[in-house]
Image 1 (spheres, rainbow, N blue to C red):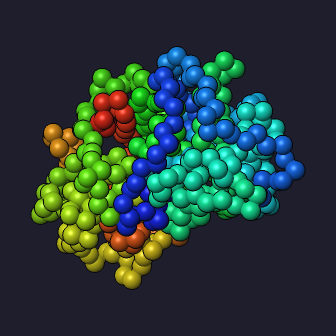
Image 2 (image 1 turned 180 degrees about the vertical axis):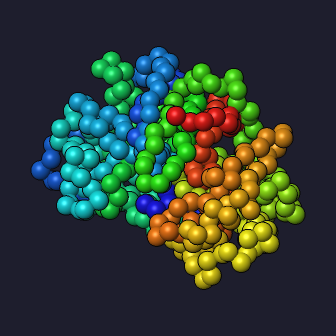
Length: 429
């Protein structure tokens, strides 16, 4: 996917409703590991799930740490199944459903070695149509499901970049070590997708990996990306030894009575208050960064979106300042990826970057994210460099999204137990 959006277009304009059947609660799990579709055959031996089947008790609190590869996304490698099969997945704090690649079709972007083979796993189970999750008494539009021709639970996800992920809902374990694994988790076994990687959904939804595995906190450090080389970052599930240096901001939460059509209540929403460019505070009302009566304007931190996107009023003020600083150097009439329109030819990019300077994203409690001038422009190829900020409406959304491009050289910790997000400036290695 060009942009791993944190939420689905499908439910941006509808209320989020609860599912009546709750997953049985388990003890907390704390882990850390490497970050780095043909339909299921009717001849495949399938273990159907009983709605009353008890989940395996997770192990005691664990801590793992490893590296991930960073290109346009944060790519983790997870050992899934019994015995485990390594699966590459995009770490996405804006998505709920985690899904693995089960597409056996020969597609250029999907190496055969990355395809999950359910027939090789003894812990693999498929959800039948009569499972409460597939046919809840109260529809859950955050996890759209239906019954397929084989009486299996089917799902279809459309992301904001137009990407489709479609397949069957299953349950499967993630085995980190021989004696350490998660209970069976609800995942998607995707049979229709042209992407090489799956998704590790880490938002606040009850079916995200973080929620199902009872992860108390997780964190990552996005390294500086230069050229075509994919550097390695660091990812923790559980305690991060660097957390003493983090500054925290509380998550904004929204009771069901306050749910609004354009609001994503499962996103990590934080209180943004302003933007500075080159040390100059832009004249943007704080209200622009908060949900309005219809839910438009929330500000979310999202590892699954590459660039930063702002609602119209904020974006226009940023663009006005860029035009004031370097207007004559802008590449006229050029738009990259249908979203970035503040771009420069190579001959002008270095001088433009110096003239624009640093950018500071300001949040409640005096917390700031400083984006150095070296990370303001992204090399998008063909000798063109673009400011990594676009207008949200280009994505078809009404939110402010802080993407991973502006999270470089920054620890970002999601402390779920205390409902807060922590930031720590560092040179990620």
